[in-house]
Length: 134
Image: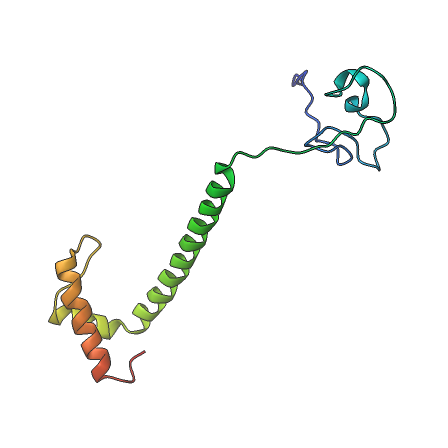
C-alpha cells in the first residue's frame, strides 16, 4: 500500500491575482491582503478610503534577456528551415554535387574555408552555365 504525501499541492486560484494576492471581482472570498495588518502604508484605521496601487517591479535586464532569447530562438528555427530545404535540394541534385566534389574536392563537416571557397566558386560557375539546374 502506498503512503500518501502529507503535503498537498494546490493549483493557484484564477480568482486571486498572482501579483498582489488580492481577489478579483469574481472572487467568492476576501483576500488576506484586505486586512488592516497586511496593508502597506496603513495607519491602522479600518477606514474605507485607503486605495492600494499594485505594481510589479521588473529588473531592467529581464526584457533584454527575453528579447534576446526570442531572437536567438527565431534564428535557430529559421536556420533549421533553411537546412531542411537545402537537404532536400541536395538530394534532388545529387549528381551535380558528386560531379562538383570530383572536380574540386569533397567537403566534410571539418572542411576549412580554403576548401570551401573554391568549391563554392566552382559550384556557382556551373550554375551560371547550366540555367536549368535548380
